Image (cartoon, rainbow, N blue to C red):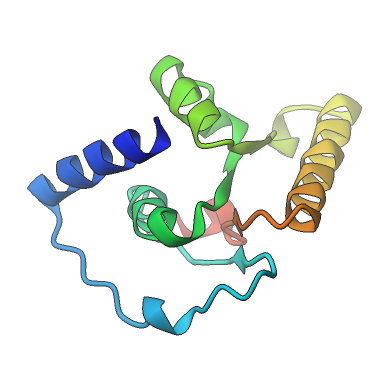
Length: 126
């Protein structure tokens, strides 16, 4: 199902964007997990990056709960095995606990050999 979703999203992106990827061949999987840390000044960038990395690396994206908490997006996020992190500005201790849980999920994913896609700038670039 993930492959079909990736093909569909790439086809839809093709209608609007012409994406050129340079240097992806230099990333050689060697059995160790990869933590991808791209920047994204536009909201569409995470979708584009995910479609380009998916075929070779199958990364698990990390996403803000506010972005994922939409009916259609939630379902896609589940299919892509997204690790959801809450927005700390909207809650107290419960949100901190959820953030710790999300960080633990990232560590566990990397320890299992999964690749993870994380945007360190988060909302700072928007």
